[in-house]
Image (cartoon, rainbow, N blue to C red):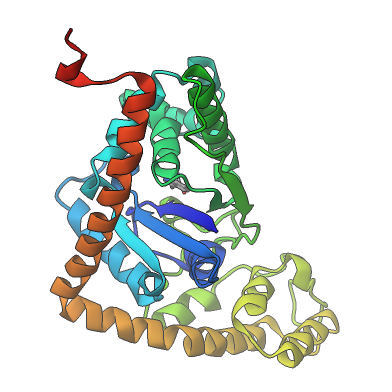
Length: 332
Ligand code: TRP
């Protein structure tokens, strides 16, 4: 039995990069009978950079709508991180065994502290400790993450080992990465689809909106005219075809059509828009239903948080036992 944990930040709308790169895999991993899975909307991680407190709750709700609309809650426990205070509590105890030097080497910290120069809080530095707490609180053994989070996961593994060693316990298993390698580029051809770069296509966008963005999206930059053959391997549109165009024959036709200049990028994008709509129309429908019943969303998240708190309480009791934390009972 493997326990899976992963998290998504509630900042900005869920886009096709999140959907194809992460959510879709989360759903299929959670459906395997040998897995139990926890997925969190990690709001506390989002507090590490400046944010709009007034708009924040809506972002959390919309992220919840998106993850429930893809059906993640069918086989997994879905919850909001701040509803389970043990995450920040465990982060403190882990922080006490976390080497500063290792934290200083985190590339995400270096990048983000450069980006938000004027307001770097300590939370940005200790971000990986909270992430380790998320994982270790459920003794998760398998963590689906993209390339940019592998370093944080390595850190979580080290921290589990440090804690176990320091307190001579085997409390924490070492969490292993389930590396999600598929990366969707931005519509501008940029490395990664990302809200902050304004190059995204929202997962819940209506078809006209999707088409508008697809139409202008980057393909193979060498294919400047219709007559020049394209290179599907480096084309973001083709990458998306391989995810959402289920018929292998059609994907092959597209591949052959592109490399022989028999189909143009416009036609290729039209086919992609159709495949996307086939897959996302039911997701949009479920999202609309959920938005119309916000209570239902809160109920699912509330149930998720109760399940997690029960699990978290057990781990915290064991952590405190191992670390000799007894509160008032420490008094002689
Ligand atoms: N830091 C991750 C990201 O930005 C989100 C995250 C928080 C996470 N806690 C986690 C991912 C625990 C995996 C496991 O993508």
